[in-house]
Image 1 (spheres, one colour):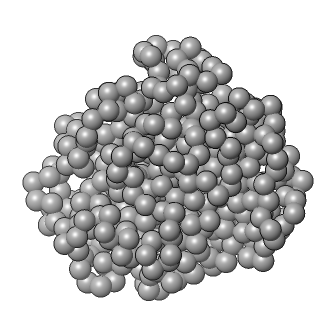
Image 2 (tube, rainbow, N blue to C red; image 1 turned 90 degrees about the vertical axis):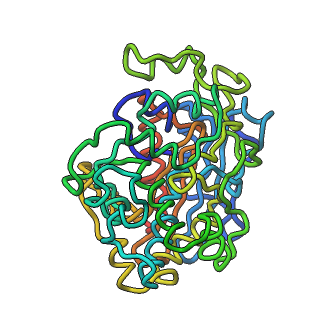
Length: 391
């Protein structure tokens, strides 16, 4: 669910052999060598269980997927598979909020207290804008140990949005509202609650009516149950997970799921509680259609699109707008988001004009903490963006 490295390994835990063939889109018979090599190095040398990439440079599409041999018995990975997009959902939530702002149903500078009275301490000082650009100072409920069993799959139970917010506000805020930036899933759970109240409709209905329906995104939906048909995700088993975490971090039995080759198949862990902060399932093709529509101005008026792209510093050299990140690479800047959930790591970006898009999907999150895998992830994203820009 979190798109950034969590402050502690416990918080991250609660967040986050060659395959048979190279899969390419009809428009491109082979992926360019740099991207092809990066995909294969990630799996064959760095130990990532699986990688799928889709690049649309505005003229043609390249799709490639590669996986470790030991994963083949579970699922043949394809670039068109459904994937748990996790925190990429935040871009959708922010888009819905900005549409409502354009219609006058809410205002970005409305205090949270107006829409959710009594829900958040100091809610009169926290605005909708602060929720969307991650400057509210609210504690991230994923940093609370009570959420550990849920997202490891060891203690699943329903977590309604209001209960997650209650967990968050049982902790003191990290800083005064608007003082600085800090990533918190609490912000987007609250944002989902706000747009429901402002529109008078459930969040899932708003996503269907305003985003997936108009854009024809048939493979995109809000997860409501643990059952999942799509790419399989994996995390290191308890013994191999411990060395990836800070000393003394309680690992227990690790993640729930069938054991596979020193890993655990985490596909069955329920994404549903992520909701407006990270609960969407989609495909690379669907998500690129959404991102290019958003950045080209098809979903928002010019004024609201400008608000979306108005960034605050993250402290990494990149900026965070309203549910989108500006990510700078050696080949150029891109806009979008990333997502992480046990077994699923995703990067979805487009150019500023919404003409080109890139998606990088990896079938692990915690496995990327190993130095070689982390380097492979960075190389993959860079190679894919450079391919998108034709460089």
